[in-house]
Length: 314
Image (cartoon, rainbow, N blue to C red):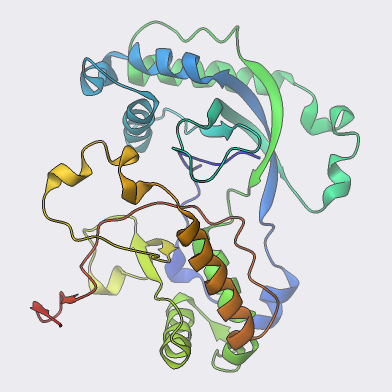
């Protein structure tokens, strides 16, 4: 399965995410989709990025795959250059450097909802596995966008391979998953109104967490430049911390991908498994599926520091 280093364009207005429990259970959005598109090798991706004049200066003299992904991601946010998905080696360990496990990259051209395993039976003969003229036209458009907005010569796509991958649905977000998790916990369901939104889900979870000493969940935002009345609409995902170290200066973030805080350990996995058990034992319902959780690090306020009062707790 693919895992994204650069997410698809799936931004949605969360401030209007209000629904009823009944309709939410009836029309739950699919978690996965089957994407059709074109694959390129990791070496080809690095060559493509290094040959784009608008990015070359940002790479510097010495660069690796992680640096290429970061600068390409930055270009995607402010141009027509399309996002790209990273494909990983089968059986790659979660404790590995995430870039070391990348086998290739994938430009999606179309997708369909994934409903059940029957769709993948005889997949080679399925419509999503057949290259069409529209796929070819979309790839040509990708090449033009990279040429127009990234500079350099027109991207040579002759070495690209058409294929399909199953991955997270572009309309299924981590925020949606969090709201589903809360709504499916019997002890919290009664605390939610028939019509509920992200704010009420967070409030219900916070009360439950304080009662059962469950792990804290941090909200991550699309940008730091937001007003209080915009905060719920700016939430991009949620984060369950498993450990922390004191932040002293910016030097700790140099070569961050190789730092100890960026490496998943067995203790991290054990704490995530414990969180899943607490959700089941104290929240009711089935065991939380954590297969879609992504290990990462974030810089945020120290747990012993209150940014509201500017004071430290002992």
